[in-house]
Image (tube, rainbow over all chains, first blue to last red; front, side, top):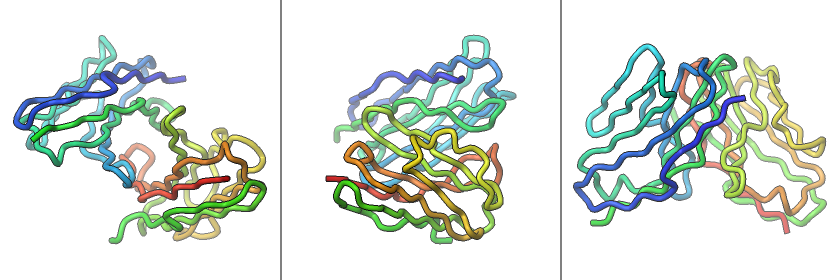
Length: 111
Length: 113
């Protein structure tokens, strides 16, 4: 089955800095890569996703990049704000369409 | 839309008791998923439904767990009898298509003592 590795497990940045979270996957058939943000006491919320037919997607301060050859994808957050503090999960979905989730990255943005 | 609604938000029960978690998906979403989240195992898919029919329950840990979806607007996850190792946050999620992102509920935090 699919295996998704996510790094780092914890990321601490100063407000205004950029943050990058990286994930690798094992199944070359995976073609859908969503990212979720989970705030304390809430369920994960889809923030951006990318499909295998594109290499990059951007939405305001958030961008995702995908390298299918290397089987890795990344989340980039620019101009971080304290409200960006949360746990971020990457996921990869292939033939079964059911995503396998990474273990999460706890992002802390210091004011 | 109010999103995916789960109840209760918190449940504390004694070992051996029956526990029922409830979920109302977003109207019009054809898929419903039950997940369990723990520090040790992360987010695990337990079971999912398509148009009220269970499709894959391979993630259900054992026979003590059962899930039903009697209609398009309601699903339950039942644990009988409950054990301390069942303590976790249980999420329900729904989606329009299997290849779309999911909308998660706020979860039920279950503590079995």
